[in-house]
Length: 418
Image (tube, rainbow, N blue to C red; front, side):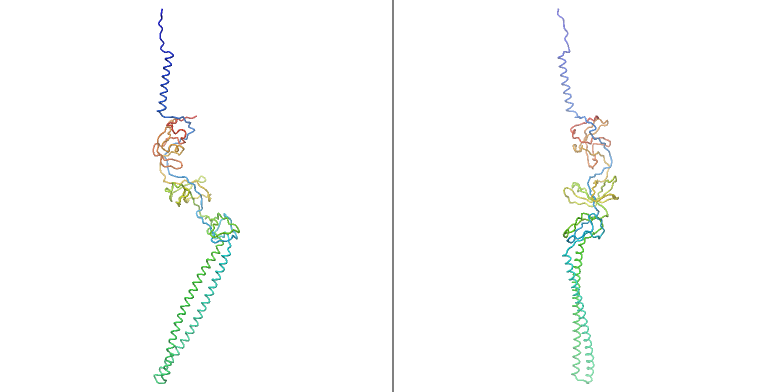
C-alpha cells in the first residue's frame, strides 16, 4: 500500500537560492550606500590639529627681518692720496670729533705747497714795492705841487704889482706884459700838475687794487693747498665708532679711497627687506613691533626705498618710545609690520589645511566630537597667525586645521582615539 510522503518546504536547494538572493541584495545595498552616500574615513585624533574659531582683534601683519644700524653713518674717504705713514687708532675704536685716525705722506703735494707759499711771498713783496713806489711818487708830486703853488703865488704877486705900476705909468708895457705872461703860464702849469696828480692817483689806485686781488687769489690758492696737505692727516668728522678700517703702514692710498665708516653713537635705526608684493601697501608712518628678551618694542617706518632689488625693497624704521639697552649694530630682529588698523573679526588659526582647500572649505567637528564634516567657508585677510573668516564659521566652532594631504577627498572624518 502506497504512503503519502509530505513534501519538504525548506530544502537545501531552496535555502541556498534564497541565501544567494539575499547576498546579492545586500551587495547592491552596500554598493548604493558607498557610492551615493558620504565618503568616510576613520582618523586618529592624535594625528590631527583641532582648533577653535574665535572672535577677537585682527590686524594684517607680515613678518620681516630687520637689521640694526646706527642712526647716522658717515663714510670715511681719503681726500688726498698718499702713503700710510702712521696709524693713530685701530678698527672699532671710539672716536671723538677731530681726533686723528691716520697720517699719509705725499711729497708732490708738499712740494706744491712750498712753491705756492713762495709765489705768495713774491706777490706780497711786489705789492709792498709797488705801494712804496706809489707813496714816493705821491710825495714827489706833492712837492712839485707845492713848488707850482709857490711859483703861481709869486707870479700873481708880481703881475698884480706891475699892473698897478703900469696903470701909474711907472713901468713900461714890456715889463707889464712879461709879468702877465709869467702869471698865465703858472696858472696853466698848476692845472696841468693837478691833472697829472689825479691821473697818477687813479693809476696807483687801480694798480694797488689789482695787486691786492692777485694776492687774495693766490692766498686762497695757498689756503686750499694747505687744506689739501692738512687732509693728509685724516680726522674723525664726528664722534662715533670707527668700523671697516683696514689701512696698513706703507700702503699707498689713492684719492677717494674708502678708508672706513664712522657710526654715530646717538642712536639706532632698523633697516628691513620687504617682498616687492607689498610695495603698494607700505608707506611712511606704518607701525611695527618686535620682542627682545621677553619685552615688546615699537617701531615706525621713517623712510621707504622704492628701488626693487632681487624682488625686495627696503625701509628704515625708527624706535617709538623705549629703545632696548642691549641692542647692537648688525643684530637681526624678527619684526611684525602692521599693514592695517586693528579691527574685530572671526578668526581661524593658520594651518596646513589651506594648502589643500585654498580656504574654500574645512572640516568642522560636530558637537559630540565624533565626526568632522566638510563645509564650505570663505576666508579674507590673513596675518602670520590667523585667517579672517567671512562666511561659514562662527565663534566657538571647532575645525581641523592640520594638513588634509591624506583625506582631502573625504566628506567626513570619523574621529577616534586609539
